Length: 194
Image (tube, one colour):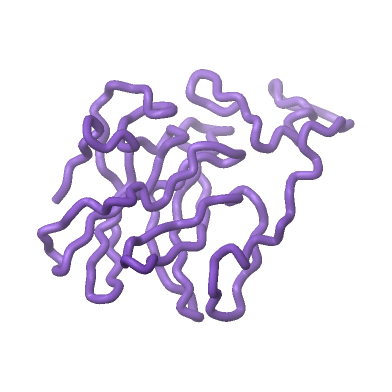
């Protein structure tokens, strides 16, 4: 139904920080209906890279034709402790709040190791789908009602342990105690977090 066009949509370029010339591929299709429009979501440009994101095409019909959403990517998180937001979906909770899931890259035990993340999402006044990944590494409140703005879910908590000295009783395979407080500063070596 669609092909990635990295020569037109720079965020669809493959590789760490979008720096590879390898032809990217589409993954993780999902469709959400909102206000009689169909949002065909997809993951791009590569599971194992920090720039894995969710994009969308929009149509008035579930089988298309679809038009590229002008605010793509709808969910994008290239930096932080967990990186990437692709291969997800968009759904509503019991209060009608929208959430966009993704599978951020961790790669501690294996290059394709992922975690599931949920980011507040929704549709703006022009019915453009969006996801708020800002402060996505830090705690958010679980809503107990329909929110007015996804900003009200942020606890305001920030890292207090970043680069603080630690003492540990043991280490394993080069994973020293200093890694306990390296949030947000993980080095990327050979495609893996170290």
